[in-house]
Length: 413
Image 1 (cartoon, helix red, strand yellow):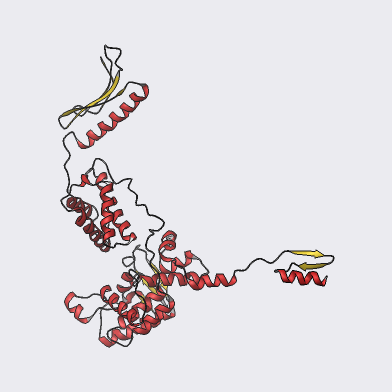
Image 2 (cartoon, rainbow, N blue to C red):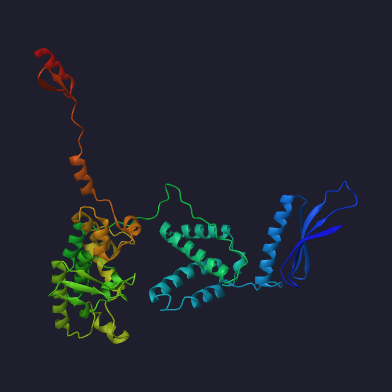
């Protein structure tokens, strides 16, 4: 005998919950959930009880919602390449993404496609797949930071797929990339003051080959701006009389519009750039112009990061400064932040404001670096507290700090 308890959904997509009892009382009655999907009758059963009836109704309600959203037919299985294309279409440039953000996504997505293959169905990816992906990146020598960024990208795309109903559920929703105490995120150091001085000494500001890199390093080592903003800086943004430089929102990673006070060394760097501008007859807008041959081939462009990085690496080799991967020009931004911390007495808010970044978590994790000289200053000022004192009549006596001194004191008594 069947007794309907609840029915969910519309006609053709309904889900029925009913109680079924049997003439043979030895058999326990059941509570069943029944619906049609993909042309087949599907049933789930539980022993009949008040709690199981509530569970069955909740399950039936979820099935009805899924059938309403996706229909009763078999869902279309999407390939990985198509998912990436749809994700890009949903984040147009420049309305949603900046061009560099798009380039960064494409570079990381290409790594994932190489591993997973463009034709792989998106519903075949599981947490085990991501474990294998991490193993493949580890074998290729990827840093922990890079691995985490690639995994986060895949998770973001799968959240998008679930929100667009390309997937009935997100298999990566609860995936967490846990690291042991020995497997820390890569902490890229800053350029130290000594290293910065040696690199500048290896770059000749009077040479046609190195003046661009010399001036760029000077500005980076006292202003601390991101290299993309610095290379795309135009002369209309520089006021040498007021000692101020204007960073337009389109140049800033966080799209901030701000004016930065200019240190005197930066003024000298800009004047050297202006002198070279006149010497080479450059009339374009950029503070650090590109090579003339490159300008003829690619049009009006600033000095390229590739050329800058190559010259910087060569200068480090000449100066016998160890080259550390991923430090490059961003190491000067860390250098400026830590200098500003020392100048402000450890005020990380003001130091971050100087370089245009107010996210305290990012500053603390990605910019603040341990300095040996600061720790030495702490060590030099660290001392034990004085020994306790006691009163001998009207005279205050200091307890000697060692055994021999105490013996001499006892002998005098």
